Length: 242
Image (cartoon, rainbow, N blue to C red; front, top):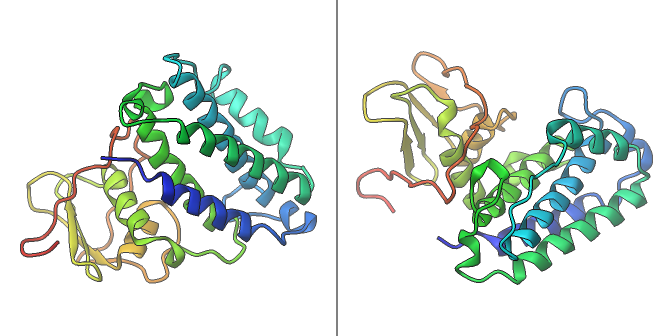
């Protein structure tokens, strides 16, 4: 399956519009992520684009490089060091690194998307899906007006499939508005229902507009998937639906 490059580019433009008028003061204020200012979230989004561009540029030459040579410590240090940029500096850096990433992806052909990368031991295509998630989920975390209701439907369905591993075996997730369902294994268990964007927000640990429901309460969520699938996960649709 082709990765959603065009959708990620649309997300980049949406993010840039979203922060076009943000002020230095707003970036210094708390985000929706505990312990992070809005500047931290934007610094992470910017460096995430830089990191993925680096992986892509090397992968296209047949080279494998670490996402961060210094591991998580390097990632965290970069975010801390750049969170305090001015709003103008944040916007300029975000635009530059997003453009660099898009340029790298533009050079990829069908075979290039299968090239391995060190990010989660996946392939180049998987980084496109990951960037799509990062852009939209963290736009909500900026707490500047974007909500999960603003997510594209395709992003929401992908996020549900990607995050199913956070649920106990036997859980079935039913999106009533798009008539789709996903299952964790084949044994019967808890059925969680709601709108597709609300289900995606809940699974992503964000606040949905309307909380999904289950007969005996929502199951506890496990950790974020440590090793996501390399391509879009297989969708299990209800009988008679698309």
